[in-house]
Image (cartoon, rainbow, N blue to C red):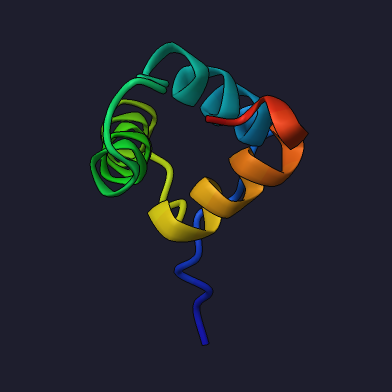
Length: 70
């Protein structure tokens, strides 16, 4: 049986989190703010050939940024 999951290269998670930093519009309303960051993950996935879940990455981003998030 073939494993179709894409292999994550070292640093890709951090690269995605950094990409999300560049899209952090903390002055946006909460729902829009989350949507902007999740959309950033989708853009990153398309450009890098990854398949990160946008919601999971949003939660990881918020947790990794602590109280500085939003």
